Length: 153
Image (tube, rainbow, N blue to C red; front, top):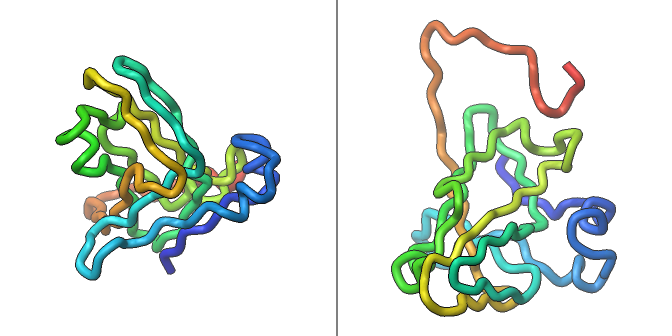
């Protein structure tokens, strides 16, 4: 099963705000068109990124995936092409065991930088990045670890 979920309200209060209306109003990622590869992630609130500025932006989202899936978080094409704004790590790789981990419940964040010469303005509900599910392979001699992020092992 692949599924996006909101983080719990307790995690939302810790990371973002104790505003229950804000929590209830933001939307989960979805594909915008029939053949879109990526799921658009939407801004929870308005923000402005000034030239040269870097901001860490919460998504309010966690994801459950199949055992051989990863979710790649990527810039939207228009961010870099039109505005010279990009994610600081270029590609965020979310592993299956990030979901419900002990430290942050699997809450995904993006960190973006404005390398352009004008303000980058994002309104609540606008797409701010995209996520693409990728199947991955393992080597034939892979050594299976018992360690994961959701337990104390």
